[in-house]
Each structure stands twice: as structure tokens, then as C-alpha cells.
Length: 611
Image (cartoon, rainbow, N blue to C red; front, side, top):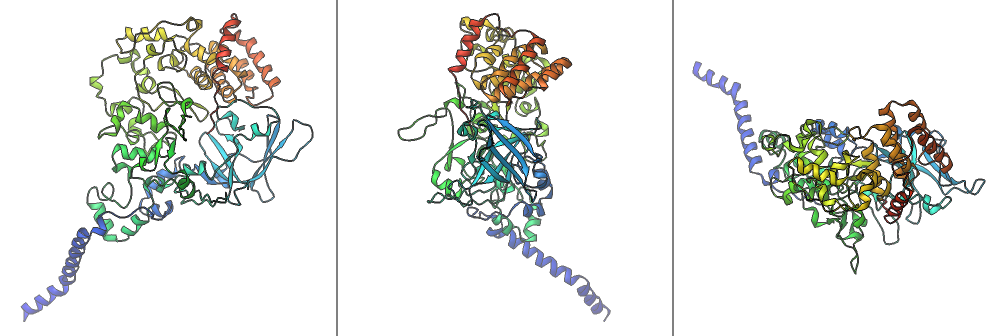
């Protein structure tokens, strides 16, 4: 009897647990064997679930993404999203006055009228701002304006808020184009561009431009801004798969299941370097669509994790369009094919020997950058800053002592990824990794080199000889032209280069490492305040301001503070004359024939680069 009671007690005490364990084991076995829980799924055509849904299971990743400028790339125009005051500010430029204020309901608006003809004419723009684009360096504004595309047509307005300058600018000062004619509405509205078939494609998640045969647009977004599914792909199938708590537990317990081996979502960290880089290259590498009509109707068709080349090809210097084919993109690249504009970072990577043609082990975007747990300013991983970016692949012990001849004061990037790219109203590092070779450029004036962007007072022939003296590989320099003896490479680029060269020369002269004392740099820069390109004048203004700060000269600081790079010509010339009084003549003022020759070189190299 006692034994029977003991058996009964055992069943009562442990029976439910045993049954539960057996059921759990069966469920685990069933789940592991279930192809629907682990095998491939059809992601194409899946719906976007939006970032708030992702946050439920991935709170840390969601929080780190929210700190990025990707999240704020496109926002609704309200609250903290608006960086500009919209409190009645006015911008007078090119014979037009833009007023930025708010309507009776507090909504931001921009009104632009012509002033050059006397009196007040009808506005050429009078629109309420509905969305913002950008939040890091400058912020642009979008308005709903029906210009033949229907009620859903959205246009990017031609004025923007410059965050660093704390002021309104016209977009002629951000893109590389000549000023234009005072009072010419076409010149003023040059950057009034339609959002639906342009900006929308890279600045949002799963955009569908919605172009219709009748010319109207019915644009739809999976999510405004660059959100989770822009990089991971639509997550509907992923959500469905992970509705099972048991599947989620197993995925977390089995190494790799939650990340690389989960085919219901694209995780760039689990892709090959080449495939992961294509996720970035979709937007950070301007492209040509295989079927433009389909893109304008339904979006670009790219699914993160799949091959980008299936839907588009990257633009290079020799890329062609049309029939017969034309190659219209040459001016966006240096003569050796290196991109010289931002938004071509992917092309720079593809051209880099470190990429190894996309082979296993080759460099990819994720080797240096991370969307999560990185400084939002450039998304550079904490363990890849400065020289650490190269030491991840290059054994420091294998690098000869004294390599480069600069010691620790100069990082690998400054020589191998110099600032020869223009974008976002400044010089930026190139993403084409290469070894400096100034000797190959002696006798040419069509491309900057890494050495003379720091040694701003030196020629390329000097740089080539210095490299040889340090035992570094490089081309033997050919003969110098007479004009190369007129001054340093940076000075010649500033006075006679094309607009990108002039901006980059001004940017180089703004850097504390530049090998000249600040007052001499200012003397070189003053002439650029009269440049035909507003973007060059802005670069020169910032460079003079920085050098005046470095010099500690209060008079110089006050003089450049009075300069408005978009202001009237007569007011700008007053400041130019004052700066000349303070720093003396320019580098070639005693040789007007040389200045004239360099000015003529500028005229031969006009550039019109908008978007």
C-alpha cells in the first residue's frame, strides 16, 4: 500500500513535468526539422513592417539606428525635425527675395519674389513645406506643388538651411554651377527639382515613385527616411517566421541562426563583403537603371542580400547612355577614373585594390563602417578610426619603420585616401584607396595629389623627389612645364583649376596641417572670394575664417565675418579690399600675365554639376 501511494505521489509530482518535457522535446524536434522555420522564404513582394515593429525584438539596434543621420534623412516638416527657425528670415540673392516664415497654423512656408525690377512682383514660389531632407550639414525643404504631376507632386525648394553656418543659403552655393544672371528666374530656380522621381529613391525606405502614363505621380513610401528595411529588406516574412516563441529561443541559442543563417531577412553583417557593400552602393554609388520606366513606376527593384547588378549598374567615367551611346559622366571623375564627387563612394571601393574585385576576404563597406554603435557623423566603427582602418588587414609589423616619413602625426588615410572629393559643401576623403604618386602628375594640371594637398607650398616635382628620398615607390617625374614653376600645386589649382580643384585647394588651405603660416594662406585665398562659383566663394570664406582664427588676428576675424558669399558684389568687394590691406598682395599680383593665363584656364574648365 505504501509503495502504491509513493508511485501515485511520484506521478502527481513529476508527471506533468515529464509530459511537458516530452511535449517540449517533440516541439523542438519538430521546429528544427521544419523547413518553414529555417529554410528559404520568398522575401520579394513582402510588405514593409516599419522600424517601430523591429524595435520590439531589437531594441538596442533600433536605438543605435535612431541616433544616425540616416533616420533623419527625410522627415515630416514639424517639431524638432525643422532645423531652420522659419521666423521671418529673408535671403536676398540673384535679384530675388526668399522669406521663410509660418502660416496662421504655424506650418513652415517659403515665399520667393523678384526684387530686381523694382516693386513686388507675383511670387515665383509660394509653398508650404511638407518634408525635410537632411539634418547633418544642411537641410533642404520639400513642398507640394502641382507643376503638371498632380496633387501628389513634391518639389525640392531652391533654398536650404546650412547647419554649420547657421544661415539660409541658396543651393547654387552647395552645388558646383556658375552664379547665373541677376533677375533670371530659370537661374534662380535651377535647383527646384522634383522629389518624386529623384530624391525619393535614396532618401527613403522602399519608395515607389508611382509615375503614371498621364504624367501624374502617386508616390508611396514603405517608411519615411532611411529605416531598418532600407538595409535589411522588407520584414513581413521575417515577422511571420518569428511569431513562434520556440523558434525565437532556438534561433538565439543556435549560433548563427539569428543572423547570417536566417534567410527571412538580410543581415549585412552576415553577407559576404561584396554583397553587403552592394546594400550601401545602392545609394552611395550613383547608378543607371536597367529599366528606368519600371523604376519610376515601382521603385528600383533591389532586394538587400541579392545582386545589385541585376537591377542597375554603377556610373563610371566611361559609362554610356542612349542610342547612339554617349558618355556624359566624364566630368564627375578625375582623368584616372577616380570619382571626384560624393555619392560615388561605392565606385571608389570597386576601384580599390583592397576590394580584390569582390573576392572573399576583400575589403567591404562594413570593414570600416557600421550603422549601429558607431559615431553618427561618419558611421566609422570605433575600432577602425585613423590608422586602425588599415591595420585590420595590414600587419603593422610588416610595414617598414618610418614608412611615409611622417611618423604618427599623419595617418594612413591622409596619404592613401586624400581629400580629392567634393560633396556636401566641403572636401571629403576619396574612397578609392591608392598609393600617392605625384611624379605621374608632373606636367599635368587636371588632378590633385595627396602630397601637395598638405605640402601646400610645394610643387609636384618636389613631392616626387621627396618620395624617392624616403624610399617610397612612385613614378619618375617627367619635365615640368613653365607654368608649374609659377607657384605651388595648391596655389595653381586655386587660381587656375576647375571649380572642383579650386574648392579642394581652398579646403586644403583651411587645414591646420597645411605647411604655411595662416596669414600667407589668407593672402592666397582672398582672390577666391571673387570667384564666379558661389560654392568656391563659400569654401574660401570658411578657409579664411579658419586661418584668421588660427592667426589670432582680431582684425582679420572681423573682416571675414562681414563677408557674405551670396551677398551683393559691391559689398563683397569692400571686404576683399579690406583683407588685401591686412594681408598684402596675392601670390601672383606682381605678374598679371600669369594671373591672366590662370584665369583663362579657369574659363576653359567650366563645370555644371547639380545633383
